[in-house]
Image 1 (cartoon, rainbow, N blue to C red):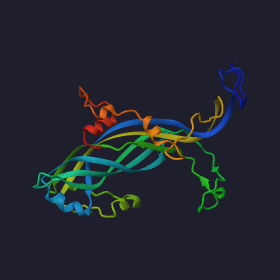
Image 2 (image 1 turned 120 degrees about the horizontal axis):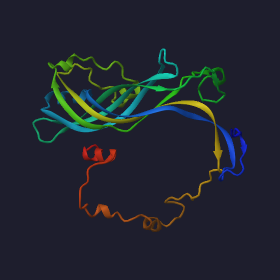
Image 3 (image 1 turned 90 degrees about the vertical axis):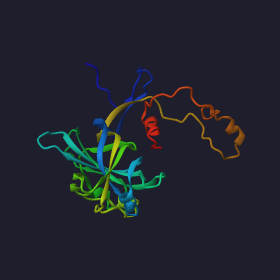
Image 4 (image 1 turned 120 degrees about the vertical axis):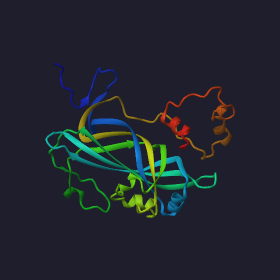
Length: 278
């Protein structure tokens, strides 16, 4: 059985100089998802309600992810597992067509709820820290929860579809969004429709996301050397020749000559460009 590695210098190990103990966040479980979110209720700004009520049709535009509210709770009778509840808040811009062939932009809010279950291990230690935080009570007297930390990574979604419905449809039986955080409401200046519109818009979005559970851990890792930057800092000041900097920029040939063939989109950015979401 090999000897256990302990912190300290390491000899004859392919350039590893030392084994050090660090405090970092260890990922215990993670998942990725590609959600096609159908029929999300669109809450327009108050200034756009009249445009929506008079619109003949609507088409997709662009969407921006504003915030994700994340909550972690342990799963009953399944030790070490946790539910992660997420609420995504989007600012969606659509094209509304009235009697004129020129569309009118309407902006509003869409909300998407998602839940996943991941393994986050267990921890019963009470964690205290002397880290100073300006304006907060003395951190040495505060105990931190030992729940794992959920991290959500997401990109701006793709608007796949948008449709306009009259309020006599079955969709109108749905309730309004329960609560909008202050930071989201302030983004729209607090001027969102309360839900009593005669017509409604429902949007379909494509969302890519990664969710993971992390815990503070002490890990023993190999160290090759101190990390010293190898290149010098450069910029457009300090007396540098601006023409010399310009000569280092490659000529943008693709901007002058169109491609000979058109390929199918393969990446997320390509797909957004094809959908007119840029």
